[in-house]
Image 1 (spheres, rainbow, N blue to C red):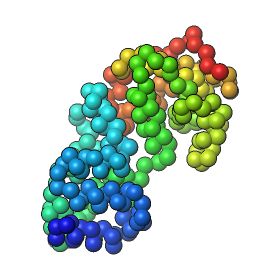
Image 2 (image 1 turned 30 degrees about the vertical axis):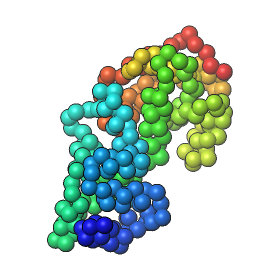
Image 3 (image 1 turned 90 degrees about the horizontal axis):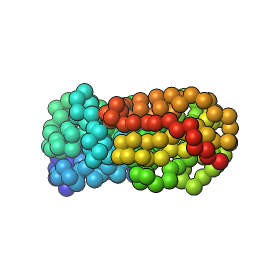
Image 4 (image 1 turned 120 degrees about the vertical axis):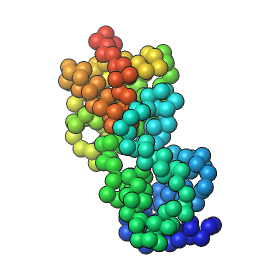
Length: 233
């Protein structure tokens, strides 16, 4: 390891927000990224550690990544390309605040930790774009506050138990099925018989599009079409 990396590692291990991650996979991935000089190798470590960065890569593949006013993308790029020597020099000069803020911002720990509802919505978006176009869809549940959740092969009741275990609280307010009809188009219903539907399609559409935008995507290019003719058990 370089002297610059050793200096940064020593500092981070004594820095409280990072020390609180000691022994976690996240801490290991942060150090592994910083130890790399190759941006592509850094990308692999960041993708392993950040669900948000994985979404950005998915959006890039789909041509959905928002090009302007995307602070996350800008900070990710700085993290991936800035030499470790610059970070080490900043520590030596007592000017490390910007670098430490970027680490927290990009890896979402400490003062920039993501709330559980945000990570659940990102997971939901990932699963939507994992669906095959024209194939059978998946069941989903809608929770208070606009949280959407799905788990392959599980009933709506089983999904509700999952969320309760995660401490999200609150009973589902609606549910149904969602399928991918084209690369950027999805069809959904609210026809689950597990509980009374809200009968408000916007209750699904609005939080989902908002989550796509908040995670760096161009939400206006994603089409969500409500289907009133399909039923789910």
